[in-house]
Image (tube, rainbow, N blue to C red; front, side, top):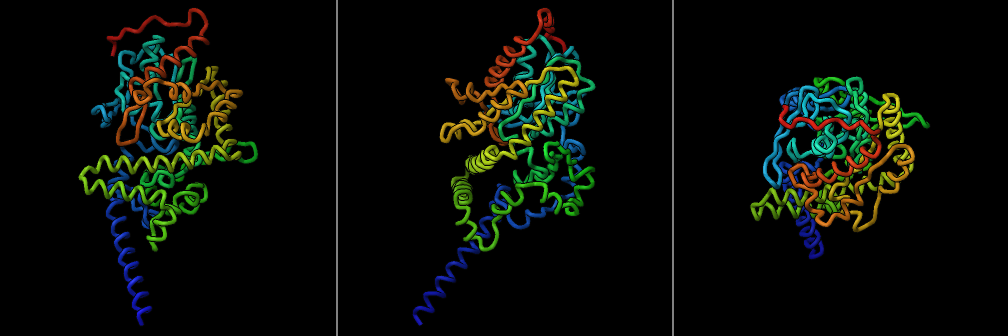
Length: 416
């Protein structure tokens, strides 16, 4: 009888813990969407959310792109900053608008220079150094695949001599995604095109969502989306907090444990913003681990190499000089310091196909490395100081490839 009572008591305690954990997860996920539950497998997309996305950035070919003549505001550790998009969809370049351009920059948010003002971006600094209007077509969260497609779109209107493609190492993961929600949980509107390799041939697969209105019916293509996106089974599903919650907490304890502790501590100390940032650092660690795993796979390296080759071929046909710039995130530098360089050998090998400027070593060896980045709700990005360094390195590279007399006269800083 005593044994039965003990077993019943233990089962009761487990039941209470299970219920408490389920309630806690559902409460915390409201402020931290990376705690995912079964409902997140097929999330609801409200009409209001879809309409706002359609107005602000939806693009059937690229997935998303910022609308011309718009602006935005970011809150950083150094205070708020505002960015502006000009009439052709570039980031504004104060003092150089409308002037001739010999250089265009494409890429992700590190190309766009998120969390810095318009006159603190590396394309703007480069404009000052080389006296030319450097066009900035960077878009947040782009992979190399989307950036190349945007280059192809903008190419007919470009009349420069150099195209700089600037990406973070995580572009390896981004090119394998077709719904960002499966890699960046909660990013439910971000459907994108992707490429796959068929033998040695690069095959373009358009986004599953070709009209913003189709977002209301994305479930119709969910089976195909899941089949195309390796992160659904390889990452997303194993992170879903489902019954039995205690088992899933134990199975993914290296991820779930620290996240729950950070968020609960934030509620106790009433410093939820700091707690959320610490929990997000766990997510960044998970993402870099997944990215490093992709760099270790020959088939994944093959896809990234094929996209670089497409970039080079596009530039060759347009008779412009390509340059691929790899800009590390702070998490990359921390990972390399602990475990070694997981992507350097790959990008060094790409140098046989395309000029590559990998800034990792320069950032690692910088005497004040923390000065190179600024923090924000979207994760850290390169600071004004870091952008100045990037511009100087790019100017040196570009000047070494210009013919005498190519340099334009200094621009009038008073022109708007």
